[in-house]
Image 1 (tube, rainbow, N blue to C red):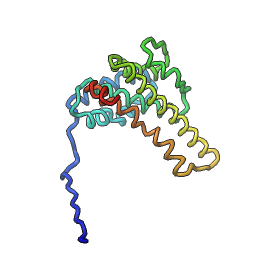
Image 2: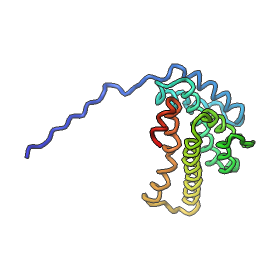
Image 3: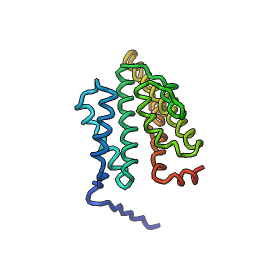
Image 4: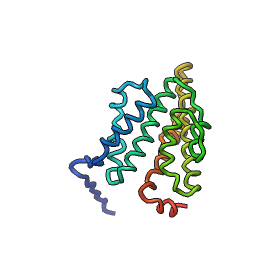
Length: 193
């Protein structure tokens, strides 16, 4: 039997275009974050590169999608920072209440995510239920991951690779993030059901 020869072709550059309104969306999001989190240093928000993490992967999408995705991930980063520092309590039920159209949350982190969820209110109830489930799994996973890191700092115990991968499978956040693709074409979600 003759050996098979494989060729891998790749472009000379991996650089893609960023959404033309990504910087504008980023400035709106930073203003929102500065209002809700005045204690966060300006340079922290600048280092977040909101225009990058919403503008490049969503370069062909609407400005609205780039804005919603950028805001969602910005609150995600703030959540991680709050969780790491332990600077305020993380109340999962309060955060998840934003999926209810009559949410009365006063939690500033939850209010930010609520403004993102509001962009999906026109979607079928089953879609919102599935996104809430995925989002809850991520939130709970983040708390488990934080507890594991805290335990490591206190005791030196390191999770096994399998233990960590089980947690990381959830905390990488892929499941709640995939729901953004349906902002552009809600009918695609119906095909998935």
